Amino acid sequence: MNMGDDLYREIILENYKSKKNRGALESPAFHQEGVNPSCGDDIELYIKSDGERITDVSFDGMGCSICLASANMLCEAIRGMKVDEAERLIDGVKGMLTRNEVPDFPDGAEDLEAIQGVANYPVRVKCALLSWNTLNQILEEIRGESA
Ligand code: ZN
Image (cartoon, rainbow, N blue to C red):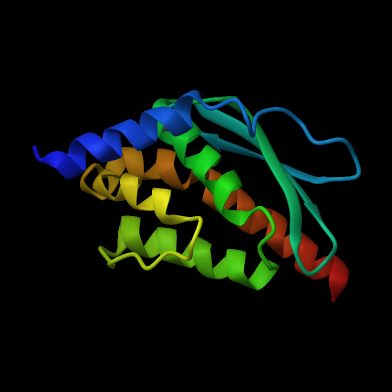
């Protein structure tokens, strides 16, 4: 236990409690449900995009603290990002949680380092990655439409 752990716990708690990114976006918006049966996490992710950038993002649903904190961090990090930047960020988060890679997140996404400790708990990695896997599905859909 060190200072870093306390700081990280506080960041996770803040993101878990935040209501700023909660609720559906008005249509037209991309949306996709993500379910993690092993924990009971069940979220819905909403994205607006002009084909190049993610212009707005929100989520709704139920889940554990790790799942909801990670989804909130996702919203904070990718709003305004280009689609390919968001794809790189998904890869960075997966690398941190499943391949023990040292994260190198862009400005505005540093909070994500707070969930790095989840990598030590394989069951919880699914919770942390749920929103990111859901995002990946939506980005594929956006790519398909603008191709
Ligand atoms: Zn969970």
